[in-house]
Every structure is written in C-alpha cells, then in structure tokens.
Length: 352
Image (cartoon, rainbow, N blue to C red; front, side, top):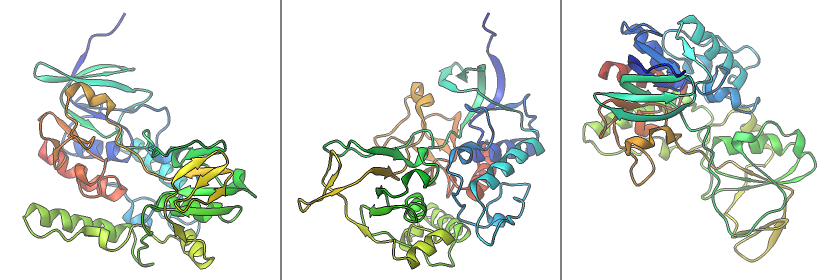
C-alpha cells in the first residue's frame, strides 16, 4: 500500500556538494533535517559526482579553498599537489554525518509538479508536498557527446566512464575536448599511449599560479558588476580555461599539450580530417562536457530555448517555489564548485 504524501517545508533534490551545502544553510537557519526539510539523493553512496569520477582526478584548488561552509576540508597530505577525488568523497561523507543532514539515499526523483499551493515531489522513496523545492542534481548524469557524420568501430567512452589509462597502453587514442577534464586525461593517457588532442579552438592555459580560488573571486566580481549594470569584464574567460595542476604541467613539459582542429567525420578505424587525410585510432575519449540533469522538472514546463531554466540568481523566474543550485554560473557564481556551492547556498537560503 502506497503511503500518502508527506507535507514538508523544503525538499532538496541531490545529495552532492551543492545539496549538502544547502542542507547546512537550511539547518543553520533553524530548520530541522528530516522534519522541516529532506535531502533526496538518487544513489546509494555519498560523495555526489566525486564518487563517480576517475581516481586520479585532482581538484583545482588546495583544501582551504575547496571547502563547504562550516567545516574546512582536512588538509591533503598525500603530496604537495591538490587533493584527489577520493579525498573529496571522504570529506563529503564525513560532512554529511557531521551535520546530521539525514540524506535519503536511493531516492531518485521522478518528477516535480504543481499541486495547489505546493510542489509535489515524487521519488522512489515516497512523495512529498513541499512549500519550496531546491534542485541540486548537477550535470554528471547527463554526459554530452557531439554528433559527427560517419561511424567508428573502435572503443568510445566519455569522461563520465573513464577510470584510468591502463586499458589504453600501446594504443592510438584520440582525446576530444578543450577543458580541464580533457587536459588531465590527456596528461595521463599520453604516458602509456600515442595520443592526439582535438579542440574546437586553441586551448587556453591559466598561469601556473592561478587556481580555483582566484577563478571563484573573478567570477564573483563579474557577477556583482553585471548586477550593478557595469561593463561585463568577461570574467575568467580572458585568462584561460585549463588549470595547470601538476600532471598537466608535466604534460606541457613533455610537449604533449599540442591540439589540432576538429576532424570532419568518423570512419571505421579512425577519423577523416578536413583536408581529406585519415588517421587510425583504437579509441576515442570524448571529454565534451555535460548537460544539466533537469528531467525531473519537466512537468513544470520551465525550460528555455537553450535547455536551461531562466533564473534570477538561483530563483526560477516562472516558478516562485523552485530554486536551482550547482549547475553553473546561471545558478550562482561558480555554484558548480565546492567553494562556490557553499556561498551560493547561503544566499539561496537567505532568499528563502
């Protein structure tokens, strides 16, 4: 027999870094986890997307600039570099317990719809009628691979499925994408395989001394200036895209970070370039980004032409009971980063 819907003040959808930061701010505002608000997460284990990333992935900032509100991430002592993904997962797991956020796991949300003065949140763990809903599902569950003509018979995988370079030893590997994931995977795979790097435009590298802390401050200043109607500085785009973590710096020193323009089409055993020549490959790794995981919000009919939901800060413009956090700058400056999620969550809860 199905239990009746439970009325509650706030439902947070997603138990990763943005959801936990939001839970902390809700608790600090006086709401009680499990009574006044609930956090629903689709997967069994804590750690959000970090638990599904490849083990050698590094954060872009040292621990003191990669923390959620209330508790500093424990110092990384493995080496002089930035923390590995496992360190972040351990931190998020302990953070969740430290603040007793009562995350309901294996609670995949199927839909959010209007039901009178409340929003109905239907999940595999039950149904809630909420005064406010905060969506923090991120992007990791929606990997994006661009469409190219032709077909390729070799191995293909996306960043979301990459684990390590071992399986590519001695192979010819094409890596597609111009962001941080592509650069870190290229640096790793190029140590054991013959690699080619393809980017839409020439890759832009940040100065060696610029990390995630500086990027967040720049993005924040840009956001504030735009709110005040001042000229758009362009934010971090004028600096570059790729953070020079240790593995990427070493790849640069080996001469690996040389990219070429996109190919024209896929062929059975490789790709055909725009000049008509072909190159054989055993595998293609698509480091081509992600899209916001917003399918659960479809019944609300809020998506714009670009696939996102128009917002004012974190607030959905056409649905006053819905907030979004952690999807990118359109839901708060650097809200998809650890430090940015905390600051955005604080402002979001103050708005609520």
